[in-house]
Length: 79
Image (spheres, rainbow, N blue to C red):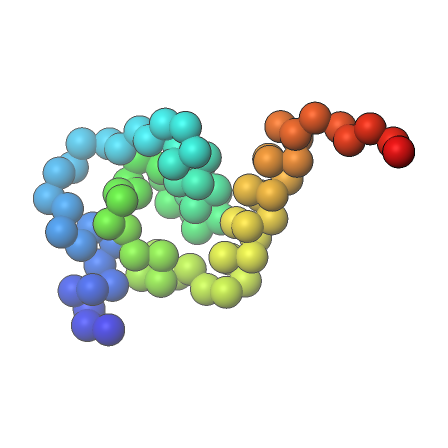
């Protein structure tokens, strides 16, 4: 990949802080926490790899999302 492709702001010239909502906001928050980047600096075009994301960080993000989803699910009834 070229350096341009790895730019965290690739294709994004808007400096307005980004404040995603819903599921996208949750994912962005997880990225921000694990990558140490303020969520307002992330963009839909941000490159995970350029922000120092690797497979271990990806697994941590998946675990955060899974835990969040588990808290939202109703407890299963014992059969």
